[in-house]
Image (cartoon, rainbow, N blue to C red; front, side, top):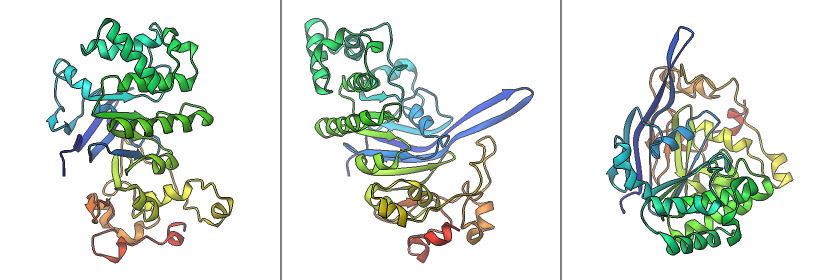
Length: 340
């Protein structure tokens, strides 16, 4: 086993809330742990508000974590200052969700892509021009677009500029925060194919954040499922999609649309009751218990103790009181019972 490119251990991020006399803490991320190997793509999925983007911002140190540890290529970057982080920025870059607001409207596309190269002292003058041209070619953009401004490009072209900028300094880690959700459906496939080809050619590791399960199945080697600030299941992609163990993961997969109409009609949908609890006051014990169809089988333990993320073997980890190594409950839970 080689040393992971990224290792996150017990990551916590709380946001204090003050206003109108009220005080509280938003539990955005609570005890998230995972690692990403060299050349691996890890998908991070979950509902809106589950804490996916906060994890990404903490990993990139755009926000300071409340507690926990973040290691990049073995070096602890959790509490490094901005000055100390600057040389390490060469090893990690991010592709943002909005391909327009993440680009400086006052700079040409060529200047945007070339900025990391000049900031890191990699190239100047003609060498900088040559490298920018190579990057434009690599992401499938015409060379003359380097003189255009972001507002003159389409959404797909702007996201290609974002990819070129992120890959300019050959980072070891790329964090992609829903990079295609703001694009037309017709453009999404081309960007995803480009990302996959670039990852295969350049060998960078990637944390891919999305709510689209089909995209995760297509791109990622492993998948981590988040619910209300915690990882509830982590497994190799093929195993997660064929044999999900956590009730929440099963509900997510049952809601995904299958292209085959006959298969789609034959599937049973698992409908969860109620809404996601507020991160200002998460439930005690298991955070999924207020919506879990099987909560009666684990009470009162689910009310009192937070289920740990246990290893079931083969890299499959689950945080559920009903799922334990070697027990019958590690088999696929009954969809009919889950569906109510």
